[in-house]
Length: 65
Image: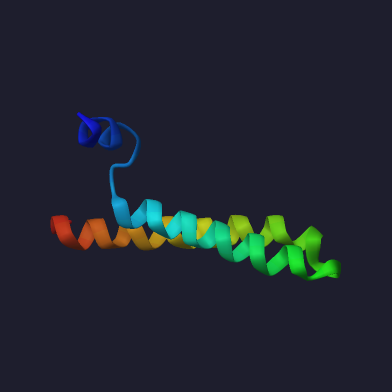
């Protein structure tokens, strides 16, 4: 039952892991740098877009499209 509930929220484990890792990088990296707090949002967005693009390309190669 736990696996089914997990599947409702997480379709691809590597995609979810990439998001969590990037959130950690931005949190740790940009909160420690005092002058770059305003760039944290930009870095967060850019990184999440890259994680999404990588996931879509990997899925497209796997499905043969």
